[in-house]
Length: 186
Image (cartoon, rainbow, N blue to C red; front, side):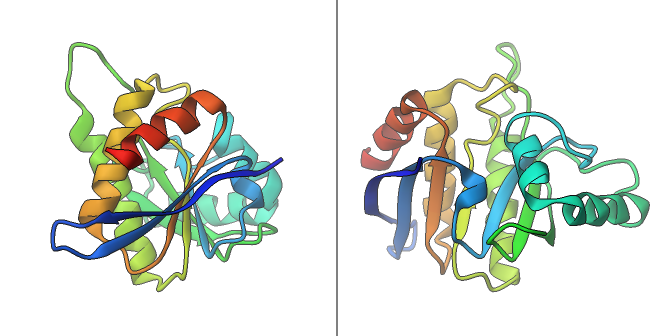
């Protein structure tokens, strides 16, 4: 089930440009967008949560593309905050943009890495000339990032980057939707 919580959240970038943002509670793998962002682990070889769902729904083409990246571009794995793109396999999207978010730690400020994950994903999407992009709540699942802070960083970074395409935040439950709604309306 996909429930559109609100269309057309408009925010202003630092340069005064309108940023088109949408919030959806549902399955990121079912989104009809040009690119889907995968909250990947640094191996790029699949895992749990969003990462596992994208690999399962997209089929073996995504894993094959990730293995090719590991054999060439990122032999030691994708560093936290960086982003790479692959085919989307059997997904509706054309691309999957894989990014590694940081694991939250109460004694160490790693927010710059979460900002980098969003920023680098947005910039890569722009270089691919996508028409639309869907994000999960990066680091807000098993990586333990506090949801309200993760949502605020996601929205603030997206507005600051002012992408030339609509951005859709696809969240997995009502609690995440509430956190993103609060960030979008602040």
